[in-house]
Image 1 (tube, rainbow, N blue to C red):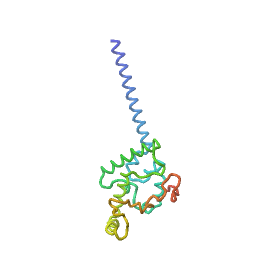
Image 2 (spheres, helix red, strand yellow):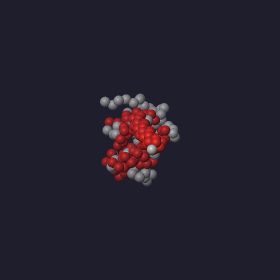
Image 3 (cartoon, rainbow, N blue to C red):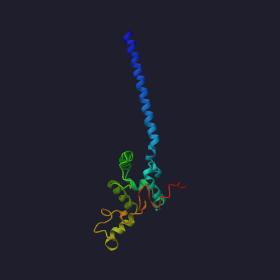
Image 4 (tube, rainbow, N blue to C red):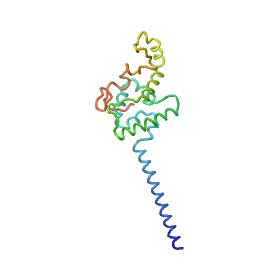
Length: 184
């Protein structure tokens, strides 16, 4: 009977240690969510993009552009065709950004991925539909696209390179990087 009593006491201690360890793990996880501002990525606030300092230049140049008045980062950079595709792209981009920024494997002159470029192109065309349809219809008269139209050839920013992030997109130099300021 003495062995059974000691065994139950050991089982109780193991349960308490396991519960304590689980609670500590949950608290550490919640603290990491707080530190990384992870919940801000679920919003459409452009400030979520500057949680990581490497995006300050992109944010500052966007802030000084004409797009800052009406368009957020999400409206340009994520799919606009539905909840599922938007959050799948957010999750994929978030994972890739986390890995690149954590392990410092990104180019300091940040370039958009091919998938991201396709999304931005689709959103440019969608927002500026009347203009892009006119340009495509009259491409042979006014734009030399080398037999490629906007929708499957050149990207809008091959001509409109200053929109909305300026010409230089490095951490140290940007002509319009006057710092991040509060928009009122």
